Length: 226
Picture (cartoon, rainbow, N blue to C red):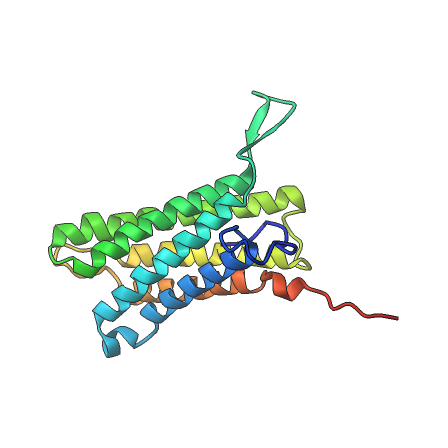
């Protein structure tokens, strides 16, 4: 959920449907906050599993909305190169596309979790798309780092976009660990509830911070008159 796009300053104020970095960031932040709430320590026991599942369901749609905006703003899919076939798929586009696909899988998973009763439903419509979505996020996180390395360099902690990409990647790894912990055993229990909830919670916090630090508002510079 790292951002590689330019600032959205200069947009017409009435163009509400135009994708902007600000809308994208807030979409990811709201979705991440809901995932963090649903997986927060003690929340499920206090509010119940249904409340946690509802948080995930709503949060997943905010993820999808934000990921769609990022895909729309990611630019062309390919660029001309002087080797091979003459064209190359851009890493920034691949990052956005795989992430968007992952959010769609989370939509399937979180929707099924609301009404899942049978063990087969939990395995095939809750855990399987959740795990596949986590893999898509992990692949997307790698592409984000590749894209940043191409436009800058791999190691540049003085740039906020670098931090966003790295924090985003940590979040993707945490979501992957969560999927491992959430694997449904033969008795219907998760393999490791602590890992499942902890991974989701940490990943959600990482995604929130990764979007928060690249909000265009932080980059605005006040003007002074002589």
